[in-house]
Every structure is written in structure tokens, then in C-alpha cells.
Length: 109
Image (tube, rainbow, N blue to C red; front, side):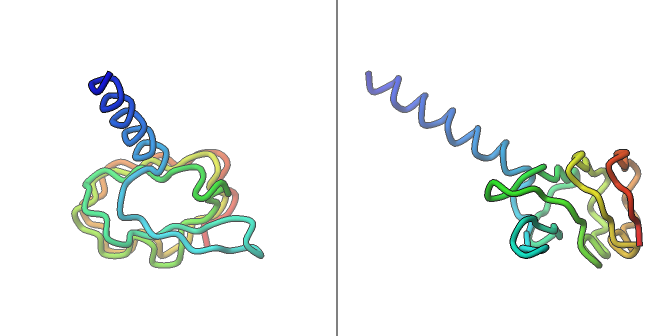
């Protein structure tokens, strides 16, 4: 019984981490609190996985200077919820070798 409870808690924690994407990303409420933008924050991973939602609202924008000068990042996964990427979002990201921009992105400015 005790083992089952511990396993259940571990699975729930793993699910929460997976749902949130890469730990250490920062999110800011935008569009009258209907969506979020994302930036690097304190993340240290070389691969960044941006989640499609945060606090049950879509993550739609990669912020101005969102990942600027993050030289340790080598790849990033951008979900289909992203519609706008700041033109300077990846300035100075010299280690970035893989980025797949989904067709949902209608603006890079």
C-alpha cells in the first residue's frame, strides 16, 4: 500500500514536470490575461521545450529578447500554440543548431 502511494505521487510529479515544459522558463501574462509569452528565466537546459499552455492559458509569444545570449541552448521545441516570435528572441544564441518553427507562427518581428 505504501509503495503504491509513493509510486502514484512520483507519477503525478513527473506528469506535472512534463506538462510545464522545461523548468526555469518565465511566463508573463499578455493580451488582457488571455495568454502568456515566454522567456528563458533561470532554465539551464541545452534543449528548451516550450509548453503549449501555462496556468491553463495558451503560450502564444516568444518575448522580445526572450532567449537572448543563451549560448548553452542547442535546440528548442516550439509548440503550435506559438503565433508570434520576436525578431530578437534568439540574438546571440550561438549554440543554437536546431529550431523548428511551426506553421502556426504568423509573425516574426
